[in-house]
Length: 235
Ligand SMILES: Nc1ccn([C@@H]2O[C@H](COP(=O)(O)OP(=O)(O)OP(=O)(O)O)[C@@H](O)[C@H]2O)c(=O)n1
Ligand SMILES: C[C@](O)(CO)[C@H](O)COP(=O)(O)O
Image 1 (cartoon, rainbow, N blue to C red):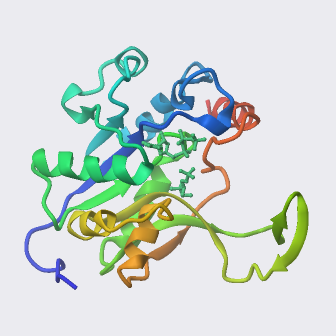
Image 2: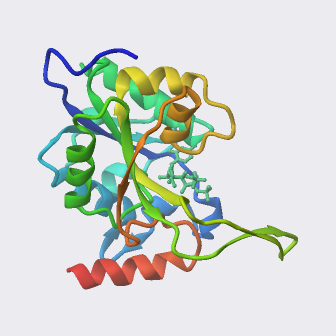
């Protein structure tokens, strides 16, 4: 493994994949634009990242036909908005890594990939991840140990109860060196739904940094109301 720990101080960049269609959400259009507590979901996500002083920049990856971003996130630096979303999240992130390199990021720099759809992220959780991974050889991710009993299902019936010990639910941000994540995603298969699994496929063991249940991904129709309530309770 490349030794990145000596030499120039690495920077941290956030990369926000926001090119999904939100098929499971039942929303009328991409879920990242659904208004929650007074502004679009993605505006909350980006505001939280903007409040993390350790981040040198945040790159937003949109779908090629996105015509809404500038209206809902006014004032966001246009040079850091790219309309190169791919057919999968992994493809969108891989395109984003190329764009970061084009903006001067280096292989030893850290990239924190964070879902636009995790709009409850708090700056202090991002800072905790950065602090935990800064001296790590591989990098890591926010995650939560499973609290519920886990069932294997088939056609709506339980086939088995799975041992939940040592099971964690992966969240984002997921933080890896650009020079490690890029080759990992190049080899990514359909089964890769997060950055960590691409890194694992190369034989590495990402660090799990315990996070909060609040950092959930807005996925299903009922999630909007929960996110809205939590956002309003913060205000
Ligand atoms: N081709 C894709 C697919 C997803 N994403 C982004 O990846 C994040 C997590 O994905 P998910 O919650 O699955 O979002 P969607 O793909 O939009 O939702 P669905 O799977 O229900 O269609 C989201 O911020 C989404 O916009 C992306 O940038 N490019
Ligand atoms: C990256 C992620 O949010 C970690 O839980 C998740 O894997 C995204 O998966 P999705 O199927 O694209 O929602």
